[in-house]
Image (cartoon, helix red, strand yellow):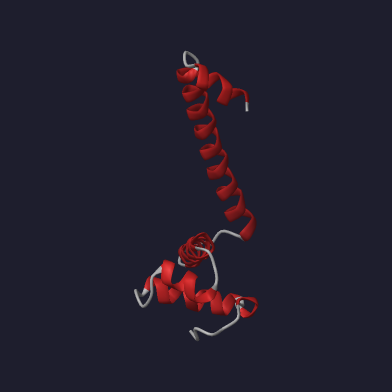
Length: 106
């Protein structure tokens, strides 16, 4: 992939090529992000999406896009639930401390 490619020119094909370079070990996520003016999170997101799509493509019965989105939404909702519980536990643990009460009101 050409290193001087402008960000706005990163089509799906170019994003896939960038992800493949990372997966092959030809470059790191951090280096690719720096070279293309992207964030590490953007490239990692593309990488996750790429691998998820590849896995689905290799299934005997591939899921349609809607099923994939529903599955991802379900996983994200579970993660949010876990984080809410964790946040509630931490908030309760901080109640005896004055600073904790001020922070919990924020």
